[in-house]
Image (cartoon, rainbow, N blue to C red; front, top):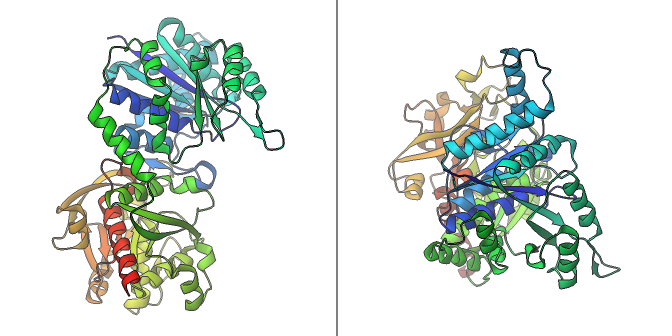
Length: 542
């Protein structure tokens, strides 16, 4: 079986959205019935993303198979509506570990091991092996970083070598700046970046241009001239309303048909039913006439929104499922610490729903607990994710069960009442990377509970990423005071879901945002938005 490859590189700066471009191309391939999957290369020497601070790198995305990967994998899954596997993530750490392992095993006896040919040969072997094992028509390869970085230079060289023997289409994403004082789109930075790419032996077939406003024809023609391309191969990626619009914008410029022709799939027909469903979703996100709710996300990493990328997208999917529009605000949890109830009411009173996402460490914890208490005492919708569920239990213990010293051993190892404690099988673990409770785990749900209503079943499966858990020694005490424990692991060892008995608040040890898709929104998010909308409707009638 012949396999084709599309390699996506970036020029000038990071953060342009290569992941969204890659995801959009994946979506187009799927619409045309071309079997494709993504590989992401990141040059950092971490083995994976598991030990990275969300402030520096954005969200750590967790896959079904326990892989801790780059946040771009979240968009791959959301656009494809498919699970992907961790073998599609290649990092500098994984790469060099493999090469050194081979050298230690004597596989390079008599040779001095070098970047070329040993690393580049391994990369070609790895890329072709993935395409073969997955039986793909097209493998998309996203190259992290920017062209010219030392960290990805050997990977780009491997892709150049791959193109000598395989069908490879290079796509480069760039940025077209525009000085307000001049009012002209400037192509010189991209010209210089393309010169660098061509010096590396790479001739892009398409240049995708990020810009604040649509590309002018003169800009397109100038870039075409300096990149040896036709003007129609210069693609406009100017500002859009939401990330899900990009596949449609690419189609409006015939990018889909041009790419299919380059790959030898020009005879493929588009799945009109799938396309119409995607259009319906995108058009809905641009329509402002619908039910409304105001949502506050109270977290400790909100200064970098990418830290909670999947939370944001899951809220979008849930709003669509409820035919609702949400007004979303991000609130730094430290800002809620040391505040009076009146001050907290002034900061949170306007919201119909409050969400506390995951995280690690004690910074900002008391502010999150204040937000949870406010939601519970003021009949707001509440959704707690992982840490947000743990703090929900601590708040209930302190303020509804008279256990004033309640805490987590993560934040206070000397607390009298460790409502949240280190998981038993974590106590002997010394290594930090890849050692948490990770990946998809089954959940048994109590009939008649809010979670049962949300999932419509007594069984669910959600992805996890945690070391600490609800301390079962406090189950009876909190239950007697009204806390509902509605979800357990099948062996009853781990508390998975807790609820308030007013059916307005729910917390889950899992991260359901990681499995949310436009076509299949996360059930607990759907319930949360539904409840927030109902609260907003009641407040208008009051």
